[in-house]
Image 1 (cartoon, chains in turn cyan, brown):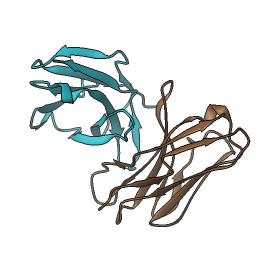
Image 2 (cartoon, rainbow over the protein chains, first blue to last red; image 1 turned 60 degrees about the horizontal axis):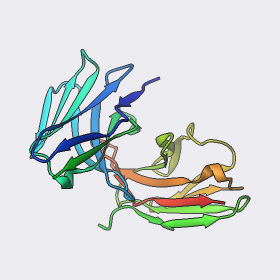
Image 3 (cartoon, rainbow over the protein chains, first blue to last red; image 1 turned 135 degrees about the horizontal axis):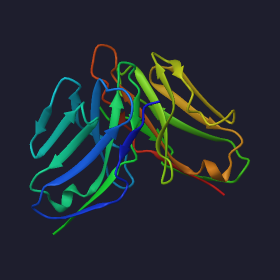
Image 4 (tube, chains in turn red, yellow; image 1 turned 60 degrees about the vertical axis):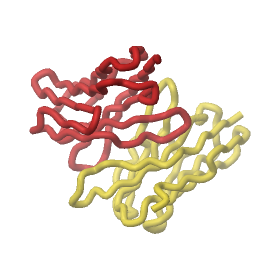
Length: 111
Length: 115
């Protein structure tokens, strides 16, 4: 069965640097990969979606890439700010409407 | 729209008691999902509905858990009897899946503590 794997260790970076988070999938190539942000005590919030046939997607300071050869998606936050500190979740979504989430990676941006 | 609404936000109960969690999805959405989140297991899908019909309940841990969606604007997740290992944050999410991209909108969650 499909598994979505994210680095469970927290990522600590300095303000202004680019944060790069990794999402690997183990089985089939998802029709879509979605990225969500979760703040403590709140539900996940949708950020970006990338389709299987897209290599890159951007939204303001966010960029997502999708490499079907490596079975991997990378999520970048450029010019990171302390307000970007949160847990970021990657999810596989197919045509059923159902999402399979990774464990999430916690990002801490230090001023 | 107010977004996905869940109640209660916090629930503390004793082992053996019945617990009912409630969810109102975003109006017009045709999918509704129930998740459980713990530090150990992350975000797990318990069950989801499409047009009020349960589609996949394979994530429901055992018979003590049940979910209903009597109409398009309301769903419940019931645990009877509750056990300490049920302590977690339970999220409800909804999406417009038919003909659209399945982005999910999550509620604020219900933090359940079973003592």
